[in-house]
Image (cartoon, rainbow, N blue to C red; front, side, top):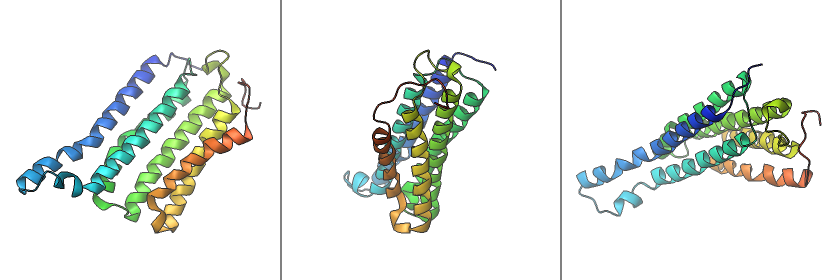
Length: 207
């Protein structure tokens, strides 16, 4: 198994996330020229584009949360293998797709396809994070010595992926739920703390 320092991988990932966050705001930069061309009032740049602004803020929070989770995970990683590398690339794909999905939300609001595209992207992202966490736990040699992935961490990561899958199904069946299903992400951390109030840092998946 090939093991390499994750430093370049983390730098590359951080750069891609930064670009994705920047791309989120680009559609908003077009609002002011449109208002000026229509001889509108300055306030209309906000009041007339609330959906676009809301979608920007939502995605900024979503991508920020995803990056924080990724950052915290890689703080425990000292090396990566091919599996971790490939899953990280798929995780990045979901991040760079979100600006497109965000623009869809700004244009089409709670349209069912748009909602499922957005939440579906989050499902894949959360699943990738869970797989990366599982990979590091299953291969203790990838983790910083004495600082492996705990069972509570893995429980939370898998729980988040399941929560997003449930949110996707709810949005598919009940139109009025739409993006509110994303709030299910608040549940796994609470449940993880209740089930595993304090756990040691195990070295093996079977522990």
